[in-house]
Length: 153
Length: 476
Ligand SMILES: [Zn+2]
Image (cartoon, rainbow over all chains, first blue to last red; front, side, top):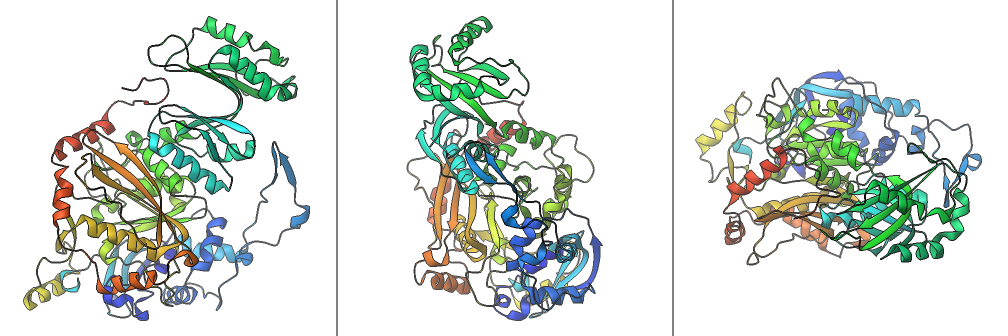
């Protein structure tokens, strides 16, 4: 499972969900693996405002990954400043209507770093632990198991 | 606004307009239907430009192609008159272009010699460029629509080719017969891709399937550019230790393997084992801002448990202290199986809608499949929620039952009626509303008595020889 997933996961126990300590889940004995993936700038821009940044920093530091900046980057920080200002950007006249040509954007170092952490770093084995109730969810072969045992449903 | 002819596949009729509208909305272009008939493969629309037409159609699964309409009529004479009236001003533009000119019949057709004569009758357009079958500058097509077993066409269209859809290529690429890992319940590729289009999948969006099985919907969503993840109550399905519907399939096949087969693993976040009634996903954001969703869309074909009954985690009766202790002692051991209890169909639907409301961004889509018996006595249920707007209902009919694709839009905060979110929040805190197995369910599933034959029908459809139901094949 890619680390971004942890930004959406809390404890599966209903009564825990209202307790802020149930998010994020804390990785324990985690075996990490890097799985190379194509950098998807459109997706990073879309998902950035939805990230719980503080919690992402916590997970990242618990896993011993490079420290993330204290404040989340702005969407504009994900793109290298363009050499061609937008107003002189090429505009093609498509048949039947004007259409601005898509300008190819170059991902910034910030985008590459985020991509590395969120979309290339995977937890393969280990546990995810709830900070509220202490319940441990096992991760095997990259798949976490959130089925609750009989005494917790 | 220019007028276009869309050549549709004559299949899944009730999905066709819905798909086109969804693709137009996604492309941000205005689309107006001028002429549409479920019984016809030709649809006439208004679109602002060729590039808008191209954007909409290149992603379509149920369209074959789009043409600028140059004329139409019920005889060749009226067709030629119509071309003079509608498009005479456009002829000169293509005078020197290399061109292709073809005649296509629906439910009928002409001999090559007759086609030649037909093409010659268009000589007044005065195309002086080179005829070229491959990659011409411009392509024209005459469409002849026949009634079944009638030798002369009843209607004609003439158009300039704009764009082809991705239908043939996508269906071929994602054909289940060639997929590494599938199960008996895998939905065919055409329908999963269609579902992704109707759910507004687009590059950069995040999509989730809570009942992913072998990953059919997430794969279709990833094909159209979304980043995807999913879950299933059965971990064996995800990890690939379960059985497979494919004869002669050996070795370990898993969901990741499917993504790799299509080079889509960059768009796959992973999956986890869970039950929607006890989802580990964030549903009450930490900051108590209930409207802050993070999913752009949810697509799913929930398990209906028609034969076995639905199951969710939990025990039928309150556990004794000793039983609780034994669960507590054993749950981390390999092979521990959590207890499950029966669950009602309506409760499942309520849970899915509530989950969607709690996780979707504003304007995000929920596209959900649901079975219905073809029986007038059975009340047709369409679940609803004050924060969701039902956008479309598409029906795929079989002999004794149908299934519907329901698509909802998550309302924006400003659109949600006052107090509605509070009520939803209360429901969550109290747990599921209708967890009892009620009369309604019994009545509902009486229509499914012949479930076994229905299931066979289903499997036959999937396993049968490749059948192209489109185009010129007469409909029974
Ligand atoms: Zn917990």
